[in-house]
Image 1 (cartoon, rainbow, N blue to C red):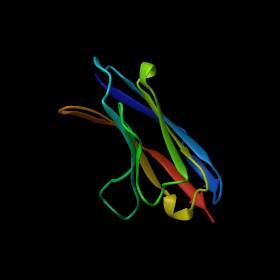
Image 2 (tube, one colour):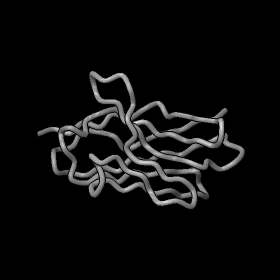
Image 3 (tube, rainbow, N blue to C red):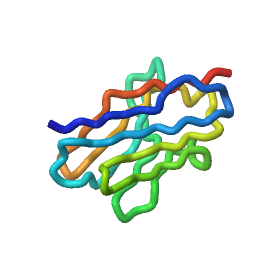
Length: 116
């Protein structure tokens, strides 16, 4: 059974930093894409924050480019999101994503709250 386990969310003041981590287990072959999405209340859809595809450059949402950095540990099927200069509008539930061809997996979500 595939599981994506996230950690690192929490409460931080505006201007602060957090680092999210996610490790995928139960995957027979390494993910091609790993990344982070977020859902901001009251929105119901998740928006892409950052993704990293094997052999490609990172892809960032315009709203986080220059502040967030995505990285992967391919040997551990892990993905990380370093979030700096956090803003109140970054408050959301952040979801880890892993994809390989027709297989798509999501983590359970971790809350990030940025206070003013």
